[in-house]
Length: 548
Image (cartoon, rainbow, N blue to C red; front, top):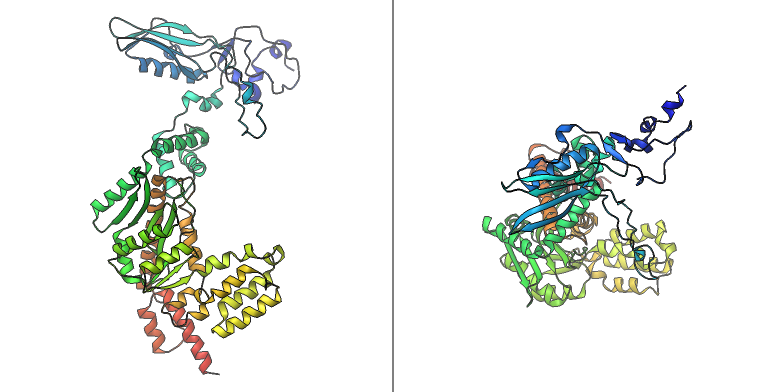
């Protein structure tokens, strides 16, 4: 059993986490008699009525009369000492004469007392509740003061070493404020993660894993979030100019990069469009079918992101160009479509798919008079749940039946008969939304597209859904232009890398054949694997039909 003398020392307390902050210090006042019981967490920590003197190597301990070449050297020396013994440094007052700093103080962060403001605790009804700030100061007098000397150096004139509180233990010194820095490694990780559409919290976890643990990060997750927030505040005033400058640099590097923009009389960015050389070249090959979508989330400035996309030879989505618009007025869409037409050397798309925005459709017919227009089925079918009762919204039989009518009807008369049956069966005769969709049936139902080239590509929502998911990753209501561009370039590079990968598979592998027909063999040679799969299905269906 421990002796009574041993129980009355502060050493046993250091083995418990609740009192571990007493490490590396020497108690000046007499220890308390704690008796023989398991210590519990004290409600008075940090204490401000006891005095502690740090136990530290003399080589890193400041002394009165010590000289430093400049103020920063003195600050760095004191910080090393402070972090070693377990406290945070705060920069204090200074005096200057003729542009030269003559006196400077560095003190412990707990120095002084924070003025209490009752308004921070009690909020008026209807006002936003302010977060209560934790009390961090307790009037600690630990500090160092330096004075400028005649020979241009600085000498330590004051060094208060005693603290009136428990110091931070080694395991917690990573949380000392003046010891935390967002390093270049952390900044680089944040930049790379944001380029890959990875948020700040995940970027912090990745940083810690790469450095071998959270204790090696050098900062907290909150520090990294604050750094990101501060950076966004710095670039906000010049964000649009930085974005336009970046587009200009792209054009200088490659004249095939096309961009145009509009500013108002106050110099604010109103509209901007861009298309690089690869996008413009893709339009020459695959520009017959263009999907235009202006339903994406807006950015920090409430500008609308509007991409032009198409389908490549692997039935994958490709980008033809993109824009930010200030509003959805007819004039804005007219400017955008005219700019798109200039970028594509005046060649109109054969078929264009859009959402139901009336002003956009009006502009489309004005700028693209020869283009066939159809509505995006995915956007329409996605709204069904919002337009019916809660019972029908969760009714799988209703959704399956409606999908069968929309997708499987082969002729207009077949669709109209099936649609009428569904409306009657589920009591939707008075539903204005369904009535309006039926009036617009020739603009979105595949049964009416049989005479349109490439209409087969409209018989699925997977492509629209895939494109929407692709762009939704890079658009956010809080994103500035610079942040968007980082994400956009990475996402576009990923899209094009996938096309290159698909090219490699189609060129250097062969799909399995299911017949001995030469036509199937020929198709496997001239088509990409994705297109051949569709061709093979039609071929097998024809063979089955002929053998009946």
